[in-house]
Each structure stands twice: as structure tokens, then as C-alpha cells.
Length: 408
Image (cartoon, rainbow, N blue to C red; front, side, top):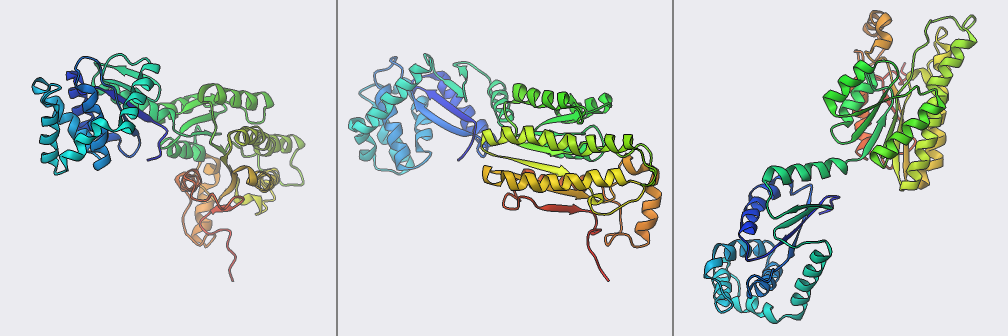
């Protein structure tokens, strides 16, 4: 099984605490973590009993005969530890072989097998190099649990290790609306850094709900963008997914003939320049890592002109081209880039005109006659995050109720 968390177990077939741990392992840890964690057993016979080394060699042979027999052998021999000596070990092997229906002679032949003896020697050397002196000693990746520990302690250690190996995602503009829905969805599978501009209260609520880290960032600011990347490097050490969601609507809807340069500059800096250059920094890092995924949340306004929102439409159109440029540039570096184009989504950005949109939808604006929800966009992000579209870099995902379609 492929896993980034390995539980390495050093036990001796002569140790009462190993009996306790073996029960914990088979009854609790393996059933709970079997599909997420790699369990590796190491024979570590202590010098307490002269027969322990031979018993460890036999355990390796039992595992060769059939997967799982070694675990049963450990339980069997530890339950009979007081009756086992160097002279009676062969009897124990025969008894266990008969119980599980295998050839006792094959198991007993392990004692003189050079390869199996070399494996036990290698396990001993490996354990000593890691500082193992007592059994059971269990390493969860590089964190050691030594001799006496509870199920709760080792379970918490494995959970921590699993959390640390989750992929890392930045979601910009995540304190509310579409960004919040995306952060909530990604927190199920990723460690999330959620940025906010002014609503710290909403960001803190998101953090409490999902465990996301929050970071204040004005996306139009070069310094803030650099600080965000620096924070992610220091706190998480990697970046697997960037969701460029942060953006703003113009403060006033004005006809293109009277709209101000100040409004144009603000919209372009926030909705285009900011995500474009944040992506530049993130993409350089992903190339260093050997891969990653990037998604831009644009809008149907990238192609649907609104004469009283010209600056917004132009910024989104430019962002759409940014997607194409990065997708083309990064394809050979195993960094996939996508555009998600939401349509009319129920957020506070459209609150003032929500009723107008509902009327237009009723009158046939959309083939699917409803407003979109933030969760609809989050589902598209989920497909990207899970790698379901990794052979579709540069793809535009329309989350718009069919608005993009043309019909007669």
C-alpha cells in the first residue's frame, strides 16, 4: 500500500508489553488505519530469553508461508511464554503449525535459513541505529512511542502524522461567499490557508469550523502576496493547490462612458494583477516541488459584456487569458491550470440585484432555472483537487446553469 505515514513496530517475542501491544494493533490500530497507514513489523529479539531470536526467525518464515501467520505466531507464543524454553520452542512451532494447517518442518527449517537470520540481524541493526532499547517501540514516521503507551496516545500520534501529510491549499478571499464554500470543501482533504482582506471575524469563524489557517492578505499588494507565500513555506513547507478566488465588484455601477480611471485601476489591480502575480510566485514553487494544481475563479463576465460593469468584465477577461498562458507554460512541469467560470451565484456580491436576476431567470435567462450556489463552484474545485481533470489542463469549467450555451 502506498502511504506517506509508516508505523514501524519493533517487538520481541518474550515481552508482556508486546502482548498488550499486539492486541492493540490487531483489534484497534489496523482496523482503524489499514487503508491510510503502512504498518511495518521488525523483529527485535532482546537477550532476555535464549529462544527469542529463533522464534523471531520462525515468525519471518510463517509470514513467507502466508500473510498474517506471523502475527498469529506472536500472539500464540506470547500466550505461552512461561512454558517456552530453548528446548520446547520446537514444540511450540509444531503446535502452532498444526493449529493453522501448515507444514511444521517447513517452519522449523527457518532456524537454519541464512537469509532469514540475516533479516533478523538487519532488523536488530536498524532498531539499534534508531535508538531502540526496549520493546515494544513504535515509530509513527519519526516519532517514537516506547514500551508503555496507551491506545489513545498512539492513535493521536497517527492522526497527527496523517494530518501533516495532507496536501496544502491556498484559497484566496475565503472569508465569505464562493471562497468560503471552497475552503469548507477543501478542508475535508487538505490543509487550507484561507485569506481574507477585512472581515477577520468571518475568517476566524471559518477557522473554528474547519481548522483552516487564516491569513490577512490584500491580493493587490505585492508585499502581502509575498508574505502569504512566505507564511505557507514556513508553516506548511509545500503548496499543492492554489485557488485564485479573491476579487471585488466595482463600488458603483457606472456606464462605460462615465466610469472612472480610479475604479478601473482598483478592479484591475485586485481582480487581475493580484491573482496573476500570486500565481507566478506559486507556480515557481510548484515547479520546484515537481507539480501542483491551480484554479482561477473567473466569471461569465469574462465574455458577457455589461456596459455598466466594464472594468469588472475587462479584468475577468484578462484573468481568463492569464489561465491560458499559465496552463500553456506549466503543462510540461506537471502543474495543471484551470478556469472556473461561475454564472449568477447567490452571494453578497449580487445581493442588491438578486431579485432582478431571479426575475430574469424565471423569464428564461438560464437553461437551468435557478440561481447558482457557492457549493456548486466548490464541487468543481473538488474535481480539480482530487486530480480527476489532470489530463485537461487549460480547461474552462462553466458553472453557470447553462448560460454559456447558445440556442435558437
